Length: 445
Ligand code: ATP
Ligand code: MG
Image 1 (tube, rainbow, N blue to C red):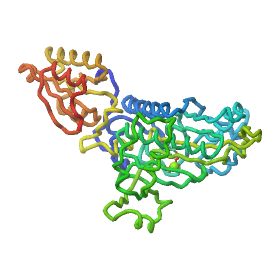
Image 2: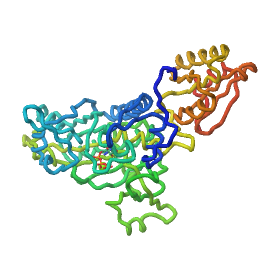
Image 3: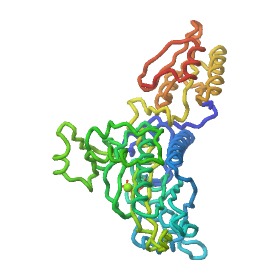
Image 4: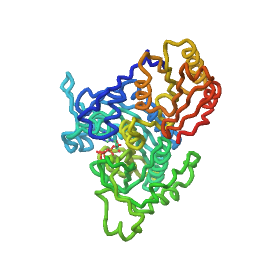
């Protein structure tokens, strides 16, 4: 992409109403624009990152054996009357009446709808297990939307739902998602800790929240330090094998959110130098809730013994749009965002220091063509802005590598590569720089 044709409306002033760094940086770097309280337009750069996060979430759901589908944002109220949640959900639910005076709602989650779909087609033990997911916009009329995309009213969620014959099998579906989540967050460059959680209005008995530690997090959390550093299971996990040992390893150590915290147990179980008491951001939440929805909604399956029983269910959410805020909270400096390679909107920023110099333009075009061909998705700053502004903007938008090309260096056959995270600079020939960037040889610190 050429910046002269692109749209990155960078703000010079720090927006005064943005209280946390990720919100400030998302506005300043032109990733999002607020259209109403808690409702954002995703500008081109922000949209690109959102799509990359979404894609990683998708790949790990697929790897875990979940099947993608897409349910609508609008849902009939009658489905929610069946489960009893239409009245229970309260003011967070956005209720809509259509021209025929039929009650609809903008979905805050999809347990009811997926249960309706399941019961319409699946009647027998031969039809389970099933693990279905979608990535769709949700609306919750949060009383205090804040911190930008962290607590929006409209937000993008990946929600998966499992259907199993019995409790044991439901546990295996739960474990699949548990492991998939750890791998997902690791690929996003995040250290997420699974913590025992309250099941809240979704109900059920087994639940974990996945929390990334950050001072600006809204929840208070307590855990064993070793959990924070524990490596993710890895992409070669056999999802059809026994996942319980991997899950046990990560649930044996103390970790709880505020609602589930037991101060006496914390002190008894965690040595003093391993006690982490911190704030955290909830990026995912998984629930096993048995027959809470299948029973009232009559989603029954016939067991091998010929008897019909309600199917066992679970639901598994990831805050896709919230993750962008979380990633920035975890990865930035005083100059701006520092994207992990896995979600960066563009792989390399090429800074043309003198857009009116022929040799400089030619070298930039060479680099741009070669890096495009190598799949590095370069962003070429070919604007007439002054060098200082170009450097500041490139730092702010946080691409992992910058290629700085100017007439003075070119005369000596040199250009500069800067790694955004470490700030480390390398002077190289144009060819060397292109080859090394194309091969991913630079370490992004
Ligand atoms: P919270 O406790 O933060 O209000 P929740 O428990 O209501 O979240 P879930 O129903 O578990 O949320 O939704 C699954 C995931 O969706 C959450 O883990 C979170 O990452 C994300 N999420 C929930 N509410 C919002 C919101 N208002 N804005 C952005 N993301 C959200
Ligand atoms: Mg939750």
